[in-house]
Length: 449
Image 1 (spheres, rainbow, N blue to C red):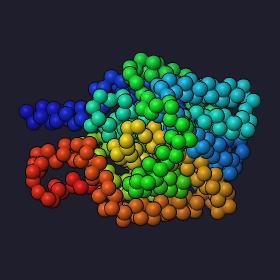
Image 2 (tube, rainbow, N blue to C red; image 1 turned 90 degrees about the vertical axis):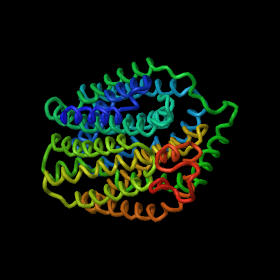
Image 3 (cartoon, helix red, strand yellow; image 1 turned 30 degrees about the vertical axis):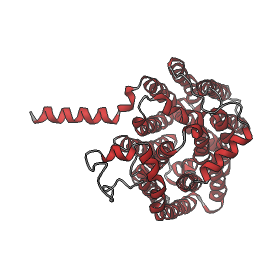
């Protein structure tokens, strides 16, 4: 009897965590994206190892990271304005085809042993441009893939879970394949993996993804998007902390080959395990968010998660033990995922629908755009003072920024609360706790953002 009750409870918990998968369009995208992202992470690891093997240069590692992500920073605001005017499904489909061709081109160059560093840089720039259009378009489409708005937070968390599930699987597989057959096979597998997500997008049925009339001028749309985002303190604060984290802390992924090879004295397998530990922590963070019932209270987790990530990185930077390094990268991944997914969820919840893609383009700029600047800076500094000290400084600055954000939380809660009330988020959470006619003091936790 007890066993059956435990099994039933476990089943209910699992259904709750996976509730966004009951929506057909999202389920298709989840499966296709999950397969494709494994290939994406294999390529990321293979590119890092290829460049460091060819050059043994921390600066060139940073340069490739910069080249691959800086175009996202430049293109994202224009992509967001276009995605609010054009058919997002078509934009998303085109970007998947282009990313597939980029991976296959890299595979051909490596497998024919004709690859040079400048080839990697140019192809990284091309992929960065593609991602500049793909990321805000995909992020703004998630809300269109689900039929019930209350499942949005769960959908975003599950989207993060497949991203980090792939982060767990992809680097580990890539490390093994690089050791056995070289980097070229990883690029080939990534190119072929795009078939899954392309098939899923073509099978989806989303009626109309346009939210702004084409008559609206591009310049006017850009100005409106920036004014909207930076004129509202909660959105502005979230984007600024996200930018700081990606500028100061996220370059740890670019520096990881240095830790794997020079500090821990390992090979590509070591690099795969280190990134896999980060992915496991991130996957745990995504499941943690997927199990939440509401977006209420995510504001404090934006700050807490940044503190966890920054602190773990600072300690990781002084570790010379492989097992300890793995253990420290687990909370690093957890903090990274909870911070980014919580930021995404809150932004998607409070944004006006007609400005969703433009806000997601700013999110992409903060998420993908600031990382290349940080990667370039981290690569240059690491060449002078070493990767460990570079990473320690970045982690500590991230913690400081999170503490400043936390001090501003009470003011931001006052601004977000009316939006939650208007969208029925607070009343839904408060159901059964306090009636609509009851007084003046909100239930404990309801005012949290």
